[in-house]
Amino acid sequence: MHFKLLLLALSAWFVVTFSSIATGIYEDPRYPGKCVITDSLVLAPGEERQELGTCSIMKCLKNGYVVFTGCNIQTIPVGCKFLGYKHPLAAFPDCCEKKYECPIFTTNIE
Image (cartoon, rainbow, N blue to C red):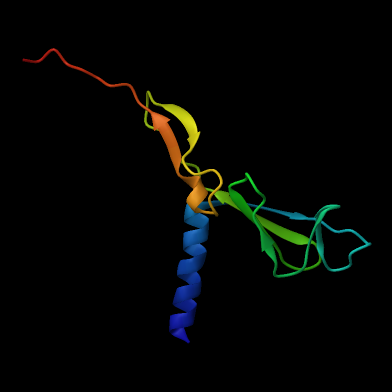
């Protein structure tokens, strides 16, 4: 029993620490109990989906309640330029890794 609680706490810590999370209600009376993101995207409770080209997942809970989980906020080293994501079409969270370019510093020390 204690192991299950510890595992649950560690899982929750991982999600909160390494992800950004948003929630919302996406109800439509035409689809009772389901999550209606768009007319062409209707999820049943427990179903989750990653939209092509987005680095996030959405999970339908119940009564239209949706949890969106995206990449955590990653800082880019000072002086570097963000170039996009290394694997934008990969499954979440593998798609979160950023690529950036940093200037090369040289010194005149001999």
